[in-house]
Every structure is written in C-alpha cells, then in structure tokens.
Length: 428
Image (cartoon, rainbow, N blue to C red; front, side, top):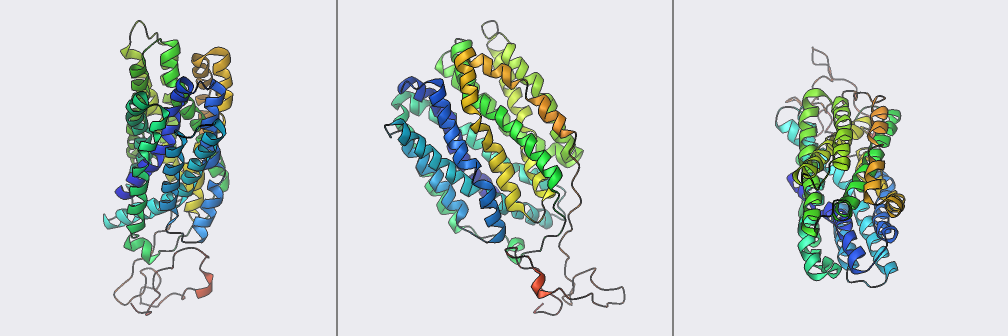
C-alpha cells in the first residue's frame, strides 16, 4: 500500500504542477487568464475522458505495466512543457501528461484495493479498509501539495523552463512499479462477488464532479486571489496554495478514520457540510486586517474538501464490487479531472470579476453536493473469499457432516478477473 501511495504521490505531482505553473505562464509568457486556464483544461481533458475506458480494460485484462507507463508519460509530458515555445506545443504536452495520469489511476486504484484487502486479511479483518484506501488517496494529495512547494522556488528562479527538473521522479516511480509484485492474496485471485449498483454510483459521481470543480477552482486561482485581491507577495501566495494542499492531505487521512467509525455516507456528508463555511471564510475574510486568518480558512477549506476524497474512492468500488478498475477510473479519474474542464469558464469569470469572483462562484457549489449526498446509501456487505480447511474444502461450502457443496463451474469465471481459489482436492 505504501508503494502505491508513493507512486500516487509522484503521479499527482504532475497534475499539481499544472496549476502551480499557471501563474508563471501568466507572468513569464504573458498568457491571458483564459489561455492559462486552457492549460488546466488540457490536463483535465487528457486525464478525464479516457479513464473509464481504461478502467474497463483493467478489469478485463491484467495490464501489469500500465501504471508504470502512465506515471512515466505523465512526467515526460509535464517536464517538457515548460521548455516548449509556442502555446499549441505547451498545450499538447500537458494534454499528453494528462493521458499518462489516465493510464495510471485505474490500474493503481485496483491494485491498491487488493493491497488494502490483503492487509486487512493479514490483520484479522478488513474493518480498517477505508483507512487503508485513504492512505493511497492521500498519496495523491501529497503529490498536489509537493507541486507548489517544489515548483515555486524553481520556477521563480529559472522560469517555466524549470519544469524539466521534474522528470526524474516519474522515471524512478515507473522503475519501482515495474519491479513490484502483487500481494499473495491478489496473486491467488480471490473471486469477487456482489451486485453492481449503478444508481448510487452515478450519484456518487455527481458529488465527485462538484468536489472536483471546487478543488480545481481553488488550486488554479488561490495564488492569483492572494496576489490580485489581497495584494500579497509571491511567497505568501505560494504559501496559501501550500497550506490549502496540506489541509487536503490531513483531510484525506482524517476522512478514512472517520468513515471506519461513523460510516462512509455520513463522512461524505460531514465533509461536504463543512466546506461551505470554510470557503465563505476564505472569500470574505479581509486579508489586510489579519494575514493569518485567510491562511487558516485556506487550510480548513483543504481539510473539509478532502474529507470525502478517499471515502468516495472506497465507496465507489463498494458500489461496483466486480469492477474495481472501472470504479477507480471514474472516482480517481473522470470525476476528479472533469473539474479542470470547467477551468475556462472560471477563467472567464476571473477576467470579468477578478479571482475573488471565482471564489464567490465556488461558494455556491457545496450545497449542490450536499443535496446529492442525501441520495447515497451505505454499500451492501461484500462477500469475503472463503478460507480453506485442511482438506482443501472451503469453509462453509459443505454441511456440518462434511458434505462438500457443489464444485464451481470452470467456465463460470468472469473474463479478466483473477483466478478463484483452488477447488476442493485440486492440489490443496
């Protein structure tokens, strides 16, 4: 799980570098707000549209090297975008980086789920599986946090061409993933059972879309909000983005812990409810009167907005128990990245009303997510793989007198799913 969380951090570093670079494209290349937000849209377009289809392929075929290839492509596209000259070349490279992200998330989400379940089984149960998945999800939040922390000094000193310095992490992460072997439980391939529930999954997707639009709006315009509205310097503007993203890491981990105690759906509602006052405080607190207070609201907004993040990933895979790759492709990919597709509309709002106008619009989004959250339901309990007795017969498949149940039909195994546990007497 820690390997996948680290790889997730590296992969989402490149997603986070896009909004971190936007102010420097505005300042160094004299891009308009609309052109700059178009770069965010390129990253979102490359990562959002392909992910559900890639998730279907991941559920059908093994594709072990896909996550490694994805993180490598994400790094190459973003790393080469800064030195590229014309705007169309920059846009195309960032689009390529987004495609790499699309390749990574479904495969990594499925593998992380298997790692969480393997760890839960080793610990005597899967009660903390949401907390385990929140570790994987928090890896992405860490990547977003590291992006401005690492990019701000490099870009401030050397301009947008310094993106080339961020190539090595992608190559190292890809190498580590290629050497990784699946956990024994995943290799054994316990068959999944359960009924896919598409209706609550679509409601969940709507909540994730609203959350994504809010998140991308904040990370794209928070530095410009500090620079143009609060009249702060570049260092304080970068600090505001970093504080928001640190709050995001804390919120993701906190959400997993809350969900294992209060339930998945309640946790989503709690985080969504807290987001509105946090964003309102960030928008209307006067920065000149108290510099620390806006930063505190930025941190609170990061916590509240990300409390549901890892929970939504886990909940989506619970709603689609037979399609974990598809669920991850939507909850980690399409629904998350689609927020970037709205960036040009937010850019037009900033052109007309300034960055503060964007934050006014963002305050109207949490009530929509909260209304959708009323239609969520707790997932149905997932059937655990049957443990084997010493005779090789799965426990519970025979009667009390030891009569074995019906042998599984060899032809009934869904294509692309891992092989089921050995049948009675078959080499046990």
